[in-house]
Length: 302
Length: 282
Image: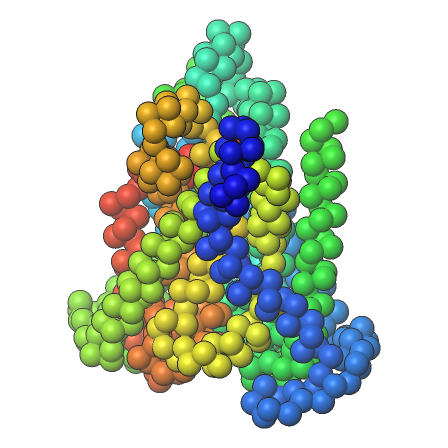
């Protein structure tokens, strides 16, 4: 090395020292991600080929057995469909309402500060807390909705106990939790606008609604698209809230991939099959994420 | 101050509708909180008898005292420790990684950046069983120190995405001037890049602070006893012990939300500004 160094040009040496520095700077992040993300993902696929209770040292290799079971496991596919329902409805509910709230606040955020603070509150609670809170607040006897219904002369309403309504109730609660996030996200998007655009529109005599339709929406398009992608990936990964609030029940009505994976692995200790569910989840989510990103960014370019 | 108002009848009606809807959403956002706070001051049977909308008979703090005597402060302390350790690790490691990815030219840059960002869509559940196994094998199982590792690892993709975008905006001239003055890559990083990235870093702290504080799946899987558990598990455990005494559980919920609400009130302005700094540059 010492002998070769003088033969290197200054530029080459610079390049090399940059590469060395880059390696050092990137090393901690890469090491941590290999330990906690890359290796576990590979290992999950590996364990999916065994039957294993997670405790005893011996596990039995069964090849594709678990995967064949998974393909025919109606509970898994039901859970996947529930994930998809949550995904579609989350986007349809959260993004428009978040957008409207942000648009309202953007009109005069100083005056509307009280609105902003209160609207933001749900985001500060943990999913676990929200799950328990709504378990009580939506109880059939003495819950908020039932009480309001009684005041209006109606009967008690069973929301979380009814297989038909439970999933939609869950979707409603998720919306309650995450709308503030998209609100702030869009608010941040609005604040990136140049004030001159508003002034120009004002001089041209645009009303606020025309402004939003003609200038606001198109300019917010990249923000809206990335919000959709976030919401989409987020809904495929949901766990805490559903796990706490319904545990996937009643029956399997609100079961999603993550809760099914968790109960299989850590309640019934079928870690082999649990890993298969997790790996299946990985494949499905990655496929959807890649597909949607391609479709959305493709559109954006045109 | 972006009022674009044409003071004709149409816009007055539009504003009226907007205000009604805004007030409605105010109610929807607030009602569960009111329910929680009001009923947390009630006795177990008082709540059943008097209904959810009545004010408590007296402001009695019995439930809150019971919660605090039940070890709540320990959970709080452990949450503070885990969140601060994880935040410190996250900031340092993602700033380290973002620097070369945004400001140096080397062969694998595009590939590594893409790889790290792609990890954003990986659900933690896919890693749960192997991480559980590793944690048991390394002796970290059921200790507080099992948590920061996975927390930081899963926070890196999003953080690098935000911070690398942010660092790209720092003018190259500053760095070049430092280099001419004989400032090495490492000193440049600590003395120029980090101070200039403060706004981006505070965005990361807000995002990830909320996530770490509220994280549930890893704590539930990697710990077993109270001595290693954080606030989300406090809620879970109190629920297990007092499942019929709803007001006590509501008191736990209220108390565990309180630190975040206080933080929010203090940092409110920074929050939206912080979100702006990172979110929509790309």
